[in-house]
Amino acid sequence: MIQGMKLQGFPRQVRITKTDEFSSVFSFRKRVSGQFLAIHYQFNQSGRARLGLVVAKKVARKSVDRNYMRRTLRELFRKQQIRIAALDLVIRPLKRFDRQQAPLVTDEFSELLIKLARTVNKRIDAPLESPSNAV
Image (cartoon, rainbow, N blue to C red; front, side, top):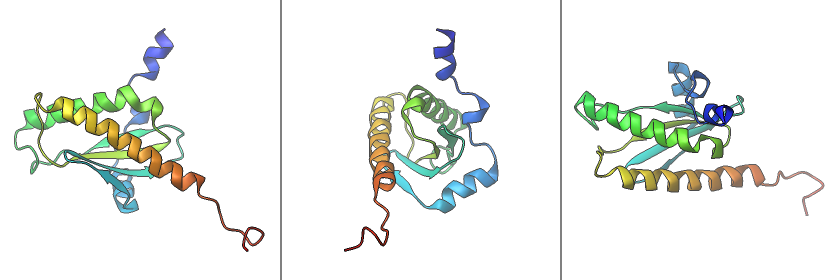
């Protein structure tokens, strides 16, 4: 049971903390978006999903609001991280949300993860063209 709880934790290995790592994900230029969130992503070599959060002052002026948004998004990621492929995710809220919109954000996050999984699987499952396959 303790091991199961560790899988649901949020250790340092699943965080994107360095500026270069954030820049790398943004420069990869792949993202899925919804009404509240934009999820930028890039494949990684660590074998597990990693999370970075960018909550701009432009989106939420008060630090209390930005911190609430970070906590909410971190918790959503933590609960679903074992279902996410080995990707670096940088989640960027597009507009402010509070406790009243939290269920909408939760639903949107789940939908974006499904959309992301479809996109990633398409890319992985796409057959590589080789001379022997060409007709």
